[in-house]
Each structure stands twice: as C-alpha cells, then as structure tokens.
Image (cartoon, rainbow, N blue to C red; front, side, top):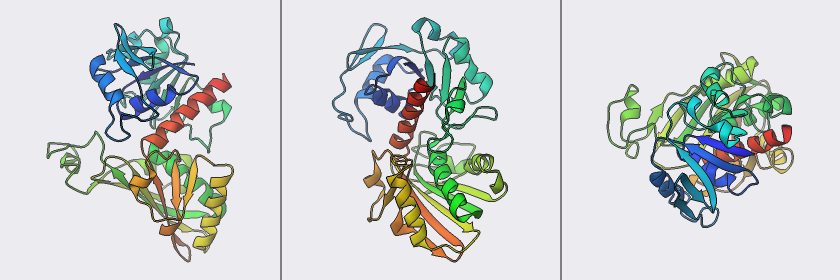
Length: 332
C-alpha cells in the first residue's frame, strides 16, 4: 500500500520508521515543520535512540526527504483537501495530527484522492473505532474512514472485555499513570486547564480524560458505571493502568492471573503480555503489547479487584496502527 501520514509528531514519526520495515511504502508526509527539521527528528530520538530499528539513513531531497533510500514527499499544507493524494496514488492516509477528528473533517483526505483514512486516536461520533484483538473484523476495516482509538483505549478495552466475559463488572474506576505529553508545559504557563499549565518535569499532575465516555460506548452495560482519570508524571515515556472494578461475583487473584497468562500465550499473543517480575516503566519500553498485566500488583478482596497493566504509550500503540494498515491491505 502507498501510505501518507498527516502530522509528524511522536506517533507520525515512529509510524514512518516502523512502516519502513514493512512491504508498505510511505510516499508522502504533511506537517507544518520544515523538511530539514523533520529529517533531524527522524534521525535523532530522545526516547528510542538514534539506532532504533537499526541505523536509519536520512537526508533531505529536493521534494522532501529520503529514509533509507526511500523518497518521501514532504508537504506543509494546512488544508488536507489541497494535498495531492490522488496524483501520488495514496491508498491510505494515517492522520496523526490530532486536528481532524470528525467524519467530515477527515473526509477531506478522501476528497484529495486517498482511498481510506485511519485516524490515530478516538474520533468523534460517527467515526468507527477499530481495536485490535476486539473488533478488528474485515467489515469495519473496509470502512473509508476508521479510527484506532488511543493508547489508553487499546489497553483498557482488551482488559475489560475479558473481565466482563469471565467475571462480570458492576463498576470500574481506571487511573492511568502516564508520561508527560506535548500538550503539557515544560515551565509554568497559562492554560485553560490550570494544572496542565504547570511544569511537566517538576510535578505529579492530575489531568482530565474522556476515556470513560469511550468505554461506555464500547460496553453499553457499563453506561454510568465508569470513572476514568490520568496522572501525568515526570517521565518521557511509559504508562501504568490501574483498573479497579467490582465484579458480579467473588474472584481470586490467581484466577485472574490464569486468564491473562493464557490469553498472552494464545489468542491475544502480541497484544496482551503477562509479567510476574518486579519491573518499572523503563523495562517495558519497546514492548509491543497494548497491555502487560503485572501479576505482582493484583489485589482481590471478595468482589473488589485491582488489576494493573503497563504499556509503552508510543511504541505499542504505533504497532497497532501498522497492524490495522496490514489488515486493511488484506481486506481490500
């Protein structure tokens, strides 16, 4: 497939490098930064290092950049409908900009000539969401505009789906301890959410998230029964999801461990991991699983259960994008 990426932030750049190791071809990218700056940020990475996926050879060309001798056109067009997707034969645009969330806004890529659009987050109402290992069927994959959900959604949907199926869930509170992001400030600055304006590397910062709204749509039986929150901490990558739920029956921690250990070895291998060692966030970087259940942190008292799972919020999530692209290629 010929792929174009709109928005070359952390996810867009990581996706570009991951796709370079597949049969798919990134033919173009669009971002407001200069091609010189883009080439630099593709080569040097503060999290994964310069030699991520081997040494990447990157240089600037007349029309854009070359990544390991593959030419990629670079555009700086703010209006997606003006991009030359038809001329370039783009099969799919992966929109990683975070700016276009509605079906109407994303359809601008179709107007420009792309055959399909994949949004790298949770879209607005009317944009079908594909979660690997949950509902990634050919029927939904073939939709002209689809969304992948976010890293937190990919983690929690897989966990909740199997908890509901096996133990029942009366209510759930989810808190994700998460690395700081580009939507926070490095020094104290004005922000509509006052806490997000505080220095990201100096504080533990609670932030509001809408994960509960997404989960209630995915699992209608949980409508009005989900609370979600996130705590941003001074690390550059990595996350820990604490999922506290009330089951419909008493459940032992060992039973939960048995379930997820089995899933990790069988039908959800590569999507759910299982850990019994004393790890920290640095130990799960570059782990491709959407959720790594940590058996050392599980607690169960009667119907009340606390389940914890790690995830690399950038690498794991971007792997899901690659997999959706590959499934879309097969489905067409």
